[in-house]
Length: 162
Image (cartoon, rainbow, N blue to C red; front, side, top):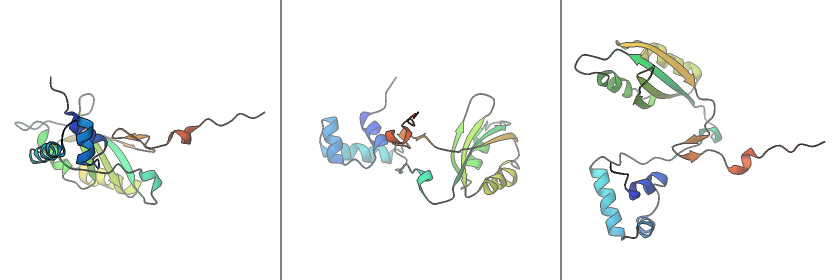
């Protein structure tokens, strides 16, 4: 079984790392790094670059919900047709096919709980083939995409004083 290329792992950790630094870490030259990145982008292996944002530190209203969805697979399309339809909604940030009690796992964002609730009741639940949903609102993010959302000193134990 193949493993992930070390260049991809380094880019996943920090996509802003310069080709010069990446070349030093991989014991190769910049041109090799640039060509491999261009090849990964052209082949669709690298689909984009994003910043990991700690939304708790922003003064904006963002509500994220994790929604489990149970669907009836469609003849000749299985889960794909419904999953692709759901993935086109701008509210849906991520969508995964899952094993277990539910078939799909969605990460949905909105400005308020009400906005997310309207998405579920008016858009998601009305799609033919969707049997049930379970919505869970995210309260706090501790780690996202491998990045800790707190510094070590934020969770120091309170001192016990007599």
